[in-house]
Length: 77
Image (cartoon, rainbow, N blue to C red; front, side, top):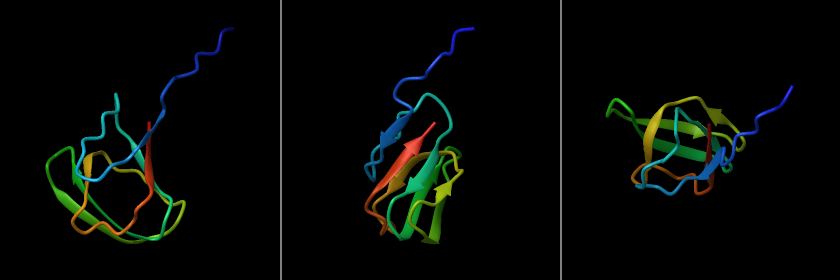
């Protein structure tokens, strides 16, 4: 049996830039703080008090600069 390994499964997240993943992503915070996102549905949501290495299972189009204090996060799909 052959195992298929996906490539480019993680993406650095740059606030106010689209997350260009081929499907839904999980956001992983690598700092403590707040994360404000725009969802695929167009809603803006702020997750307050996110802790380091916490994974948010949200479908987002982008992370917003306004309201985001976490400076280091990645998207996983």
